Length: 458
Image 1 (tube, rainbow, N blue to C red):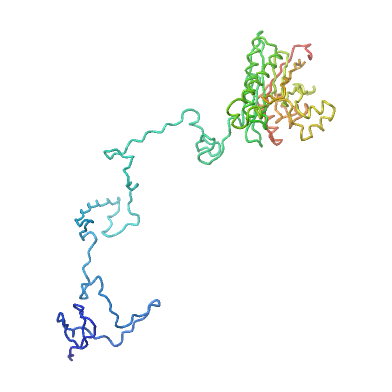
Image 2: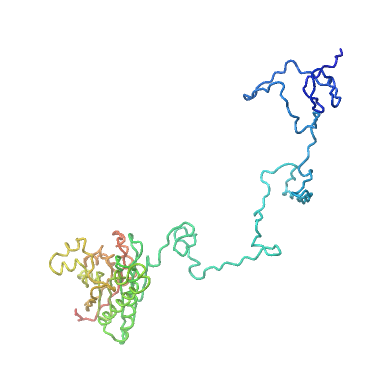
């Protein structure tokens, strides 16, 4: 059954979009047959999706962008197919074709239009400014080789991780571990004399120093020398003071003894030389940066011993000590020095006994030291002629605090100390560390040979 053309049911011509009037069967502008426009369905319910409200009837909907105006979709173009122009209206040069990427072995080339999950990206993106690493020809400029440090520093690795390089500040570049300083633990053996120094367990640096050596007297007899110095922690640069004093005293002794100077006189002169070396530190710029010279000048104590055939000479300033330990442990040991300290003064004046004096908190306040601000330098020297073989212990208070009496020190010295001085020095340092290691620990051992029969004490 045929139907008659219906009146236009749209406000505009579907072809030219000119306004229509009710009852028009043809467009007055383009002559479009309005009878082909389908009638509006009577029931076309629109359901709301996600709460969307249906648009009211009679809305003037615009023509879709992707249509040709007649309800047909417009042809699609890829971006590369549309010619572009620059800001002046000139055509843009066509981009160079990208070379196809070679497929990996055993794989197929991706199909056109397929995006890879991990596209190939350049290692470095072009710089906005010219890359200084490229020469004028575009080739990479040669990179100058960085010089590597020569000597032991180039081979120094971390003591903790065994992998990282140690920087100039003494820290590992890999794990950050602070490396031991050179003076944290020192050992030296020279002929029959040996010494060991250790930072201890509580101090951040080792302020002790020592000097040991051997020489020959004019008559050909051997002589052994040991100097031990303890830096005064309350002074400026105590570690430098002890090092300077020990070196100066050691060099003075080793130079004077071969010339025939009496060992006791040589010891006295060595202490004076050490004092001059420490005094000189007060005038150095390094001291002035920390404290004004002579107001808190570098300072240290000193103790030393010289062993020759049948003669033992000791010298000291401060509270470091020398002990005599006979090889025959049935014979009594002895302490050969007297402290320049508050406690020693109390005992000497009869105001306190030794136990009371050394129990006082002022016990270790020294009354004699080497330094530009010392009251008056009074080197102490003494000579002994032991009648038997034994070993001489030269040490700082970092050791004798844990073996104060002569008998306690003798008990700590190994029985074979005369034959193995370096091993025995290590044992004594370990004794102090086991006791707490509250201070730097330094000890030197000098074996004393058996004198001729009939020799006595001087």
